[in-house]
Amino acid sequence: MENLKRVIQEHPFAKGLNEGHLDLIAGCALNVRYNAGDFIFHEGDEANHFYLIRHGKVALETSVPGRPPLTIQTLCDGDILGWSWLIPPYFWLYDVRVIELTRAIALDGKCLRKKCEDDHDLGYELLKSFSKIMEEGLQATRLQLLDVYGRAHS
Image 1 (cartoon, rainbow, N blue to C red):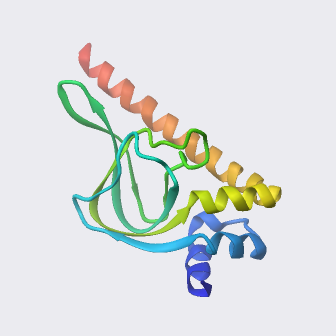
Image 2 (tube, rainbow, N blue to C red):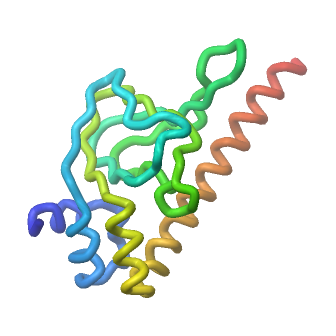
């Protein structure tokens, strides 16, 4: 666990977290690896993890009837993947396809939700972090919609 704590501490996600919170988070962590072409999760799957991307690249995609999947956002080294673990009913809203070999730390959302119930300060810190991630996702979606509908009228 000490090794995972060090890896988490080096990720931008950990900025501003205290030692105690890092210990709690590391207790819910696991190293994972995905190959190009793998799917980390699919829209509608139960959302019980989020991922600190250490190395690699993934695409957040959504289905569009009659068209190929639309990439909403691409994430890479230092990014955080997934916020649906935090908001009931805990289901993914998109597919995530691995573009190139990706190494990440998977954090167990059920484990963290329990720890947040026990330590509201941890919950508040995570909510602040994930609010920023949600806002970035909304902005990425907005830009994709402008691109898609802007081209339709050109």
